[in-house]
Amino acid sequence: MDTIELTTTEFRQNQKKFLDLAAQGVSILICRGKELFLLNRVSIESRLDDETQRKINQAREEFKTGETATINNPAELKTFLESL
Image 1 (cartoon, rainbow, N blue to C red):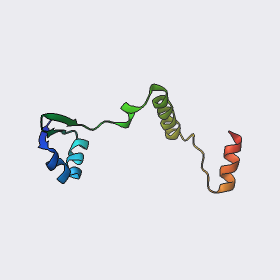
Image 2: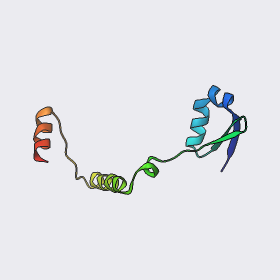
Image 3: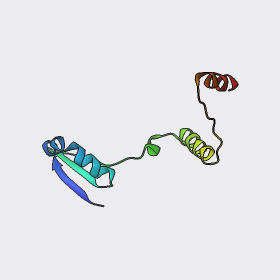
């Protein structure tokens, strides 16, 4: 994996460029004086607890198999919510 080293000034001037590179898997090492900061992409799944991730996975499977509800107007939404 590639690593790019830059100063805080360079990072501030080109944030979009370096965030895009981090999103592609490039590690960005930002130097501020004697401090170093590492910028890496982190998936949202890595920030979720196990129960939340399980619910998301279950919802994805239900969507894939067509186990979804289509709601076209406020009345249908009200009926759906009352059925829960």
